[in-house]
Image 1 (cartoon, rainbow, N blue to C red):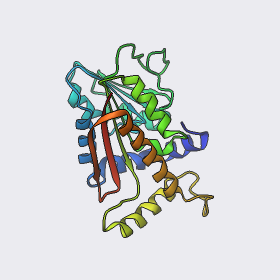
Image 2: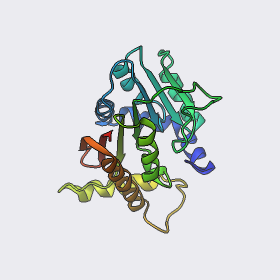
Image 3: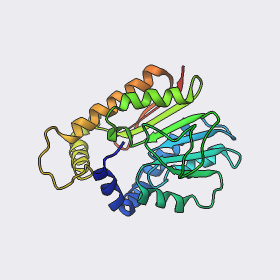
Image 4: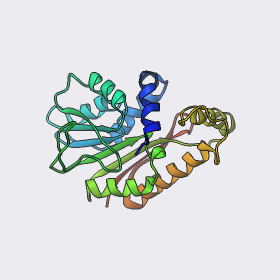
Length: 231
């Protein structure tokens, strides 16, 4: 999922990212809504692809209860260290190092437990924009949960709201600053347009594969949330 450059970038900014992920106004509410869209029952198994510093994991644990299982997957060790700190009190929340496009599910994994049983739901927030083939990753996630399973995506993209111009200007600046390497002043293609295309492709593929249970926008229209029950 990520090159060494990306790992170094997100590892270096793990503390700041953790603060933003937990304290940005409106984001905790969004995370709770994303967990709800997974339609989890107590005892379910849910996997978060690209769990980052673990901001979503407590919300998922609330849904599955102490008898369920929550697995967070990410590829950057400093970020995972933060996630482990935040979830240390839960014995049924596990954080493992792995690639969201090749998740350590159903096979041996040195960094954490192996999930041999079925996965009831997959959540991926602010992840697909970092993938080379986001639609293909969504297909793999849908296949992993199988018919009746749920997949939920939440991602930032340009707003279509009537007040979009100033919002999108701020969004473009954030995308450039958060795209490694940040020292570049010019890109062959605009990072925000590339991100928009990836988010559009991932969410469209999920809608094609599922009966939609949620299709919403949040945070001034910048964040898109799509949840589906796989057919």
